[in-house]
Amino acid sequence: MELWFMGQGYEDHLVTQEADIPEAKGLYMNDIQRLYKVASSIVNVRQQDMDLSTYIGQIASLKEEFLTVMPLTTDVGDQRIQIDKFFMVLTLIGLRPDLETIHDQILGSSSVPILG
Image (cartoon, rainbow, N blue to C red; front, side, top):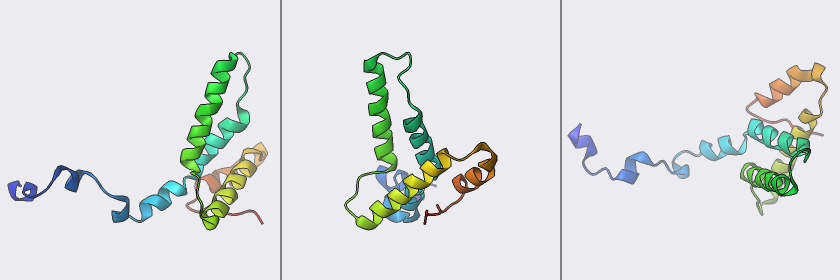
């Protein structure tokens, strides 16, 4: 056991770089359930009994959360993928309750279908 620790720096064995696991970025970027949750919160937020400051703070928080799920990018291909995912999520949010099985199937899928 002691030999294993020799030469191992703190960072060497406790931190995994994204480059070491190429799938990590893909798993994060394909988190359709997280995008669904954020988009649903955005389209359903209402001021109701909140004072204006609290309401604006909630909107700002949702904006930041949205940007973590859909980060800005200059790559046109990535932008197209993000737009496709976003509009699929909006489609799911608006589905009738009797189509819940389709909704659940898409949210549970490892790939997101695109709208025609």
